[in-house]
Amino acid sequence: MNNSWRGVIGLLLLAVVLLLIFLAFKIPNRVQAVGIGTKLPEHLNLTWQHDPKTTQSFTWRTAQGRLGTVVEYMQTSDYGGFPSNSAQHITGTEVPFLSDVGEMLMHEAEAVDLQPGVSYTYRVGSGKDGEWSGPFQFVTAPEEQQPFTFLFVSDTQAAADPTSVSGYGVWGEMLNKALDQQPDARFLLLSGDIVDVGYSQAHWERWFEAAKDKLPGLNMVPTLGNHDVLKTGTKNFRAQFQLPQNGPIGEKELAYSLDYGSVHLAVLNSEGNLSAQAAWLREDMLASELPWKIVAFHRSPYQSHAARASLDVRDAWTPIFDEAGVDLVLTGHDHAYMRSWPLYKGQNVAEGEGTTYVIGGTAGPKFYDMGDYPWMKVKFDDNTQIFSAVTVAKEDLTFKVTARDGSSVDSFTIHKPVPGQRYADVTPSHWAYTTIDNLSREGIVNGVEPLRFRPSQETTRAEFTSMLARALHLPASPAAAPFSDVLESDWFQAVVASAVKAGLIQGSDSNHFAPNERLTRQELAVLLVRAYDSQAQSAVRNRSGTATQLLSFADQTQAAGWAASSIEAALELKLLSGRTESLFAPAAFATRAETARALENLLSLLHQGK
Image (tube, rainbow, N blue to C red; front, top):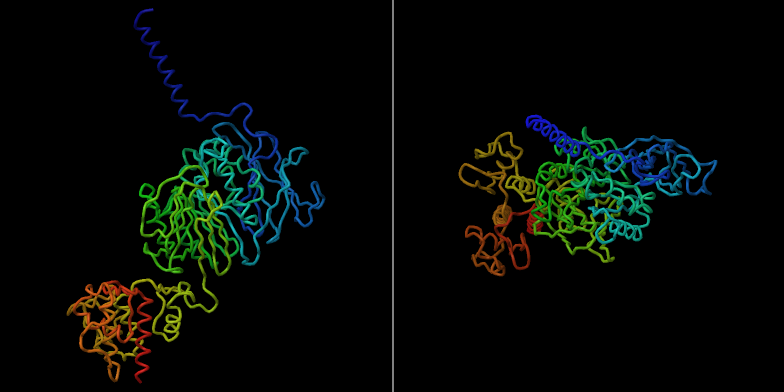
């Protein structure tokens, strides 16, 4: 054989080798001859596709070829054993699923027309003797908005082994501890990274095995994480859980919502199309009339460490949380526990005024460090696993976090309005509740949106001018406001014109009022004293200019010269007080609650002088 033929044969052999290498990487591992699974139901789990009050979905797997999907159930109060002539009998469907380690047969069934708030006993199988699993129990959601508890864990991912050190045994142990503490928990919310390698069925095998004794009696509300979606991981997720299909196009079973008791719960896919989900979420949340709104997904918009920042999620979704009045956002990803201050438009606000964000730590073996951010109220990164129990009643939500050793990590309660409460974000415990309620009744102050006063929101010059004009019953002015930035079409034009005519306000310069600029506390003092002087028959106060009360504050030197005497007068007249015992905070912006209290003080003082 000459050299040219040897060269051709060598090239052909090389091409064959390269083709085999290409096919090895391109084509997933094919089915093993015997597949995976047995004749008995395995990986049995409970979820909801429809109303939790009247339906229940069942999913399990067997070996390929094991046809027959049967569920038998009856009310637990009537249960005397299976088989039973009084049991309800439903059949479902079988769907083959090809994983990276072999083929298995998925079984799906749904019970409908159930009674709300009732315990049922059930078993699942092929319908043949010796091929049943059970009995187990589930409880439907109550008809009324009765209190209930659900469990919340995150990041159960681990090595593909069963140990309680580095493997999925950790997650199994944490679920057992959570149910020991909360045996009546109604469902388990998982905020993503359920497994470490989403496309590897070996990880799902270990995950299900670790919790096999608990999952048949506990409904799940699962969320996708970045590890769950690796390669073909989304297919593994969809195959093994039946979930609502009411989400946006392209995110079916990955983003969805459901109602349970007094909660409207939306699950989002932070690894998917954020903008499509944003549009869907706005419509979904605004359509709900339930008192509590909770959203769950994996990557938090307010991170605990710079390496895990998700600004894309923050930009896409937090404006909708603000708009829809979402109470609680539950996330994972950071492998540490964080609870935020209530946040509105990215700023810390008081309880009831914004959304609380919780990063749920981990129920697996992996931990990360935390940084420091202004939105953090509680942080915990002691390299131990946690679980959370959330108890929801119509008027309050209590959140309890427990570590693996049983110690308490955090506990807090969010309150909802009580009957007769005017604003959802001004509860009876708020320091300005009575003030805001009284002034609202008199038409002097009002909310910034339906059922929201935003007491911690900083007051603009236009807002305070409007409040002041209504408080003093200023007559309307026929003249237009003498400022180029106050247009006839502006909602505040008339009150600004009236206040200018009464000599109560001035512009930021000769031609501008700056209506949307925030009002400082020293500006508030000037306006209050000017209003008092214009209305009082006599002004009995220190006019010597000696700042005897202002001197008691450590930040006295921060007061502007033009405002010092007015601050002193406002303190003397008890129109204002310090932000704290030692600080007046003259340059700080006045909140809507502070301006309401100041106006109440002014009106009370004027009434005394009559």
